[in-house]
Length: 124
Image (cartoon, rainbow, N blue to C red; front, side, top):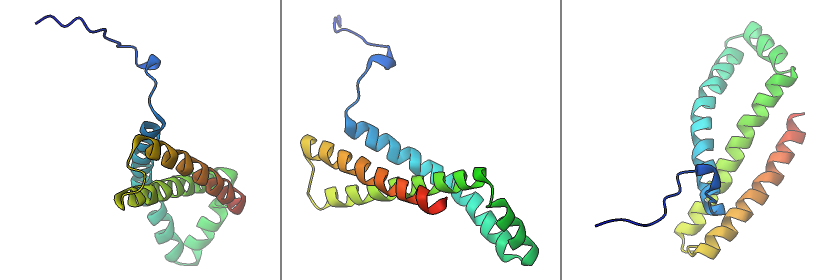
């Protein structure tokens, strides 16, 4: 059987629905948090090791780069949590249609953006 369907191999021209972007970002934020948790546990361990460790972490946290790293970890945690709540709501039977999923993704992006901006204000 000859397949005459068109084949689009240019990934840059494929337009994904908003639900796909929400799902991909949820997975990426989960992997990012998995890696970041190791760094954060190390910093916690060092800060609890004694006065010298605490002083070194306190001086490290005063730099703009470390604040950016903390904000990035908080951003990943916020987005992953908000998207997780969206999944829990969908598990209850709400927003299971395509339109409901798209609306849930838009709400997830909006709520996450507001909370991430507030986290940035809090960190700085």
